[in-house]
Length: 348
Image (cartoon, rainbow, N blue to C red):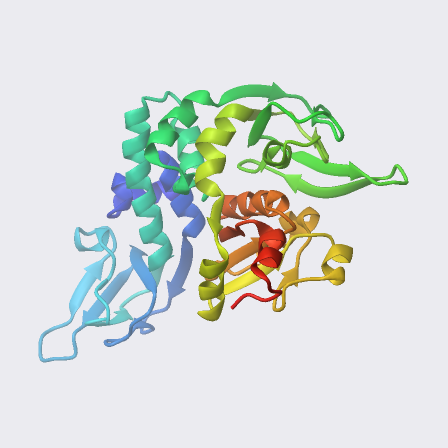
């Protein structure tokens, strides 16, 4: 379905062109034959329906005549009987074609678009698509508005070619944090045998280079462009002050214990497997930092993830990686060293 058709309906007629494209990704289509029921009075379903073609009756179940909604009418510009629980039973009076949206996802998009539209206007950018994509990144939703304005100004574009190496493994600590705006890249590392091991493939919206900036160590992987593209660069100094600080959140031992006792938090040890087996906190589980990008998708967005290593170094990198993906991640202040000084091997 052409998403331009959505502009005939409320509230899609007020969306930015960028958000309209996002709405198209949420859209599901449904067709009904004459006499089929779409929903019943009293239902409390999670969807919003728009009538694209056909006629639909809305029956309140009392003595009043059913309402008849025709596609293309003023009434059809709005979602069908949106109030929940449903006050009507909806029955197709002809073959019907409907656009269906998950209510929560659509409301989230509408809220984000309204915020973004204001911020893009405030930042006076000539590139609203870039700003819209950036503001939808979970990482930037946690950045204070004052920082955002400066961030947008400090990113600068760098065109790249297919096969170009942006970051070399073993290079001294870098000067930049990178976001891919266009194109695709490969993250790889050479093992002790000199073999290249591919760690990840990155696309638009993905970032790289943060590990070395947080740890102040040499680059631990190579990033090679797999296509022509454009990366946005942020200096190490701006990364530290404007982005890392608001994203890397800490909890002390007392706060971590309370979260774990509440049953809504996990304790993740990001050291290597051999280190973990030599000694760990009871109840923790191991996801080595080098595997965190691959494993992040398995972690629940409904839980708090407390990250621990010997100090705070690797867990700070891990927290930044998870925060970029919209997860609630916290660093255990002082790491295992602090816990040992505290006199225990458990939390909670």
